[in-house]
Length: 116
Image 1 (cartoon, rainbow, N blue to C red):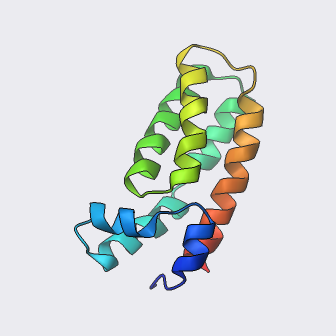
Image 2 (cartoon, one colour):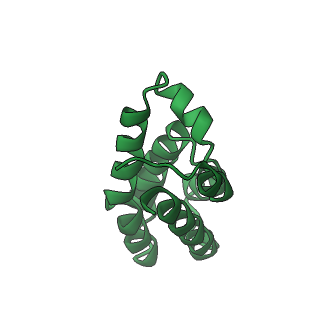
């Protein structure tokens, strides 16, 4: 699959040019990992761990997603995720549901832009 709608990507909070730069300008490789990100169940599992109030496992998943989304230049998703990671780092769960709702919206927008 080739991602062709850069305007849609930018509107969805993806810095496509920045991500492509991180991947050494290798478009096929960057596209491959963008697509894999949205095929991966980690985000869904994070929601399950948050719903179950499992702070420790939710933190690990959120931190992992933070790294992946940062490397892929999913900027809006990454920026929102930073707040959730810090909340969980402090062993707090109150407010995590609101973070996850906002993250879900950002995730869906970015996924729709990538998977068109």
